[in-house]
Image (cartoon, rainbow, N blue to C red; front, side):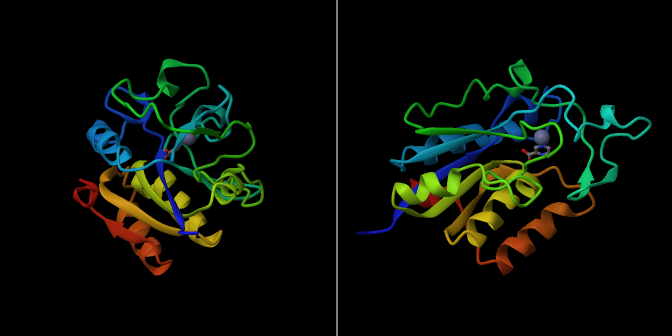
Length: 206
Ligand code: VGL
Ligand code: ZN
């Protein structure tokens, strides 16, 4: 049986687009790219960052800490963020321009107060699976193509975990935008490249 492919569309939500709580510069530019690339895939998975209002990745839970500082959590260092993508809020909705009606699965991650989850596969404790790997394997998917927000956090962690879990992985560069804290976008690309993540452009998909 030929190895199946799936497209993983990461966190294309209002919160990460201009006007959102954790806006990524030019974040909404990925929306038409996601829509176009998705047409080339029979199998598409969407992820949504989906936090309780008192999530421990929010700086507001750790006064006097400020957003973008780092603290130690039981599972390691954690960047602190502005309150964002609170479950059920407008900020957590998909970008209204996202048009992928044939998506088969939505993974909501970061739902537990104590543990962040950048990756679509594993929470930040590096132990708790989201179930995505099993879903993909059961459907014969061996290769994932990834795009979305943000390059240096949820996209990169998802791509690295895809490799760690035995999938081939590729990231569509022009389908991503980054937050870029102290060079984190360049570091993410270097890590992805050493892990064997391919770098693609969306024109490859028509
Ligand atoms: C993300 C920071 C916090 C992301 C999510 O989607 O890349 N970044 N939560
Ligand atoms: Zn988050």
